[in-house]
Image 1 (cartoon, helix red, strand yellow):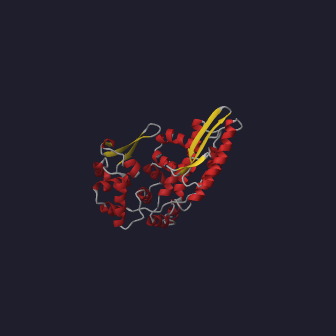
Image 2 (tube, helix red, strand yellow):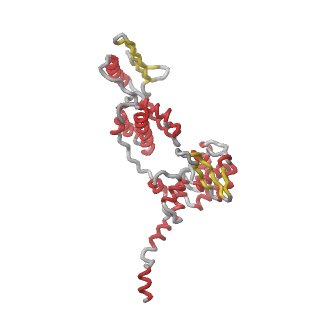
Image 3 (cartoon, rainbow, N blue to C red):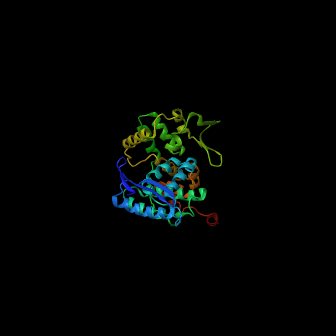
Length: 337
């Protein structure tokens, strides 16, 4: 029987080894974790029938979904700014896709979204499926993997996860004081004043990335895809924190210190990423525009900037209270006359 229980892996294994038309055809595949005997045997019947058809020329070979993901991981992820995150999300999908054909991507995505509801946040599910979709499209367009783009019927789950959590400057100053370690304080203070992602953009900085030009201090963040240098101006309030570069600890240690500090100031809902929301809110509440936010946080779209920017209630009150109070020049002249 081609399917059997691989005791060493505690998973079912499919094995096809036949001589067909004078040629040997041999395939072995470890089936997804958690599959029952019935699932394994159903897969066995389907694959044996297909492999016989391919071997005898009645059917063209089918491409695996895992093959498209492999091409994406090897050739595309290394060039992505968030390539590590993409690889991690795709790794979570491997048990679901390793036995699937490329043509099954749409149905598999729908099934995955339904089965994972309640287990993961909607944004997490969407991100994983978005990377899967990107992998299939990339493999087709750049490597000719498949006869067409099989994601054309793939539907993405809707996500409404706009966070409304941000801190004001007095709260942030209290947060800085709550840190017991100077390097942790410096990391997150720089993250706020520079509008940088603390994990991806600050933890990797070194002393060599500090650039000075007269009274200005800048952080070098590497080059863009077009080859231009990406620089970030450092606010005077955070320049002294640059002496802690490079940061000596890992992300897990710093996140633990952030949790301890936020608990001390009574803001357990505050996350490190909310520091970017906080900066965006300061900008717009001080009269800045969404374009200002886009430039400060290096957003790709103005829509992202809108999601990050929360107008302080008193700022909204001040704007609305001016309605009807200002008179046009024509009205002023009439009153004098």
